[in-house]
Each structure stands twice: as structure tokens, then as C-alpha cells.
Length: 209
Image 1: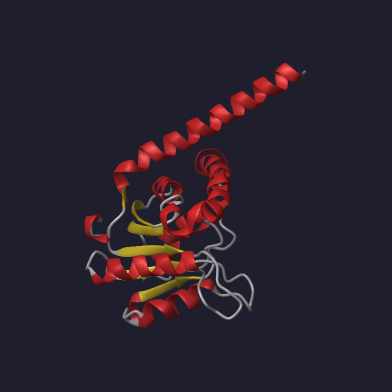
Image 2: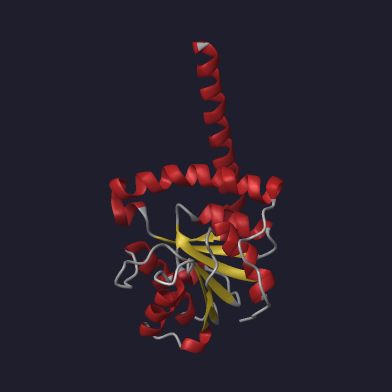
């Protein structure tokens, strides 16, 4: 029994490594670390990452919004699509994201909001049927970018990505739990886009950008 358990553990670890390697390898050519290297696209999709009770963005989310603003100001994109969680009346990631982008100089009319981007998968799924997005630059931390780019491309959005700093900015104590969770999330993403194909929590009417 012990041998079987050990063998199972080895097999599971091997599957995890293969899955992570596959997603990283197939998205490598579409991921960039500077705004100047990113090819132009109509819109940048900025993923939510937590808002404090007072409405301030988490450090990671602020970095993502700044990355989107940098793309806009560099002329790489002409619109920003903020996607995140507004599942409760008292929690609204995307409005806080827009407010910060406007403070940084982006005109309010160039910032669209996806209030039902409850996960990476749902944000990518909704981008095309709700907002008409067929090509985009995804903005998120580097550790999350391979899964985001892979998911959006599998769901019909010709996505490239701008990776904002993570390990070099936040350190091991913060990044280790995020990275471990990302391993499981990547496996789940592969299941979603290739096997289960779950619909998003909400779709709704076409809004455009």
C-alpha cells in the first residue's frame, strides 16, 4: 500500500510538472515583460486581484492597473477592460480599478468594466461574446500570465500578455502560496478549456467597448 501511494504521488507530481511546462512553453512567445515589447492590440484586459474595505487596490492589483495604463500611454492599446469581482454590493473591484486608471490619466470613456469576471476563465470567456474582444493584451503578474494567456487563446481571443513584477517585488513569503495555488489552477484551466467547458456565471447582452 505504501509503495502504491508513493507511486501515485510521483505520478501526480509528474502530471503537474508536465501540465505547467506545457502551458508555459506554448505561451512563451506571447508573453512580454515590458510595454515597449508588446505588439499593439485594441484593448488591454486587466485582471482583478483584490480591493481593501476602504476601496484601495491591493499592491498586486495596483501594479496591474499601472501596467495597463503604461500600455495605453505608450499607444499599444486604445482601451482598457477592467475585469473582476462585483458579486456583492459592498465589493467592487472594477470600479476601483477604473478610478485608479483615471487618476493616472486615462480618459474615463476609454475604460470598460466587466463586473462578472469572477475568475481568469470567466474573464476570458466573457471577453468575446460580451465585449467583442478578439485580440487583447492581458495584464497580470508573471506567475499568473501563462495560464491567463493560454486560457484566453483557447477561448478565441488572440491574446498576448504583459507580466508585471512578482517574486522580485513581493518576495518568497508572499509569492510561494500564490505560486503553489497557481499549479492547481493551471490544471483546472486545462480541464475547463479542453474537457468540461463550463459556462460563466453570467453572460448577458452584448456591450462592446
